[in-house]
Each structure stands twice: as structure tokens, then as C-alpha cells.
Image 1 (cartoon, helix red, strand yellow):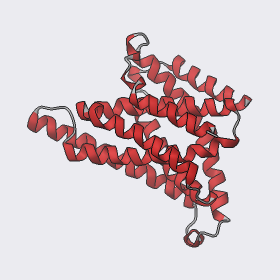
Image 2 (cartoon, one colour; image 1 turned 60 degrees about the vertical axis):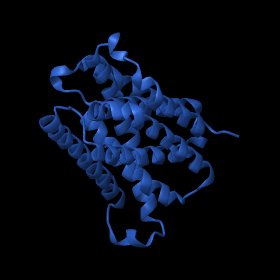
Image 3 (spheres, rainbow, N blue to C red; image 1 turned 30 degrees about the vertical axis):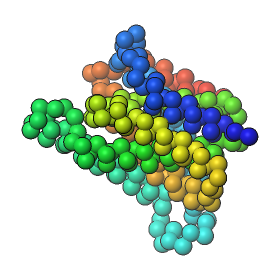
Image 4 (cartoon, rainbow, N blue to C red; image 1 turned 90 degrees about the horizontal axis):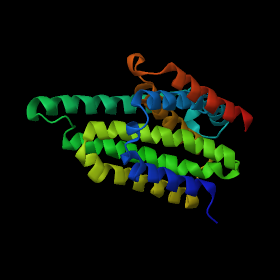
Length: 243
């Protein structure tokens, strides 16, 4: 029987494959849409990501993984590592765009950087797809709230990757990210890690999510709408507290 995790993986794959190509900004001003998405993401980080990291820290501390006994705050170190890795990749992409624009008058990354960047996000998507199996014991509303937050996150990430890589992203990148989610979801149905292992992977993922939210989804103060941001935060937070 197909669980909710697999169905959500199909929905998230659909975001990369098709929805991200829609020009939502043609009927919703970009600054309002981005502000609302940023508000939802902040609610997700504070009410879901941070508490989950705290739970993961406690679980891993009492696990039998040999090396964790020698490192304090293991989960937060993994999250920090995830943040650093994806921050470094973003800087690499920006420098590649600048170099390519100066040398070739093309505002996109160079080909090797494109593949490195996409490979990293493909791995991230496989992890997301795999971890969706953990939603099996959640209610339908909880699954839908999770999907809403991650779908908005994926949409904004997709927008940023398209800005970095231009045509190669539409031709290759989005399809690789789409496939990666499904590969992870299929693996999640047949390959099962220990709880500590899953939480360690989740911690690294959380670091990358936090970075991408702070860097891409919080709009610049000159191009933001506080009302939309506050509405997104309040709406998502209220729904999370009610379920």
C-alpha cells in the first residue's frame, strides 16, 4: 500500500517538473508572494525544524553510535555543516556567474559549476524523498501542512536555481531534481536506517533548509511586504498549533 510519504513525493516532484515554470508573479506581485512564503518558512523553522533538532540531539546522544560520545551537540554540528556546505555552493555559483558574465557576457554559471550545484541539490532531494517515509504516522492535516511548507520552499529554490543556471536548469536540472525525489522515496520504502541514522541525516538537511530560507526566502526589506510576511507566519503557525 502506498503511504502518504510516497504521494507527497509525487507532489513535490511535480513542483520541480511543472509548477515552478508557472509565472505566478503575473497575477500575484512578487514581493507579496515572496514575503508570504518567507513567513510560512519562518513558522516552519521555529515550530518544526528547531524542535526536531532538539529531539534529534537527545535521541542521538543516547544512541550506540561510537563517535557521538566524543562530540557535544552532535546534531547542531551536523546542521551547521549542512548550512556551510550549501552556503559554499551558493557562493561558488555566484562567482561563476560573475566570471561568466565578465568573460562571455552570459549571466549564468559555467558548466562544471552547474553540475556540481545540481548534484548537491539532487542529493538533498533524495534525502527529502527518503525522509518522507517518516510521515506514515502523521495525520492527513499534518502531512498537508508539511507539504505546503516544503512545496513553497522547493518553489523558491527552483526560482533561485533557474536564476543561477538559466537554460541548462530547465533542460536538465529540474528533471534531475524531480527524479532525485522519487529515487529517495522509493529507497525509503525498501531501505530502513536506524532512528539515530535518520535523525543524523535530517540534521544535515535541516542546516541546508535553514540557510536556503534565510538566504532566498526572506525578502529584502526594500522589496518586502510585512503584512504578507506576518500573515504567512501567523497562518502557518496557527495551523501547526491546532493539529
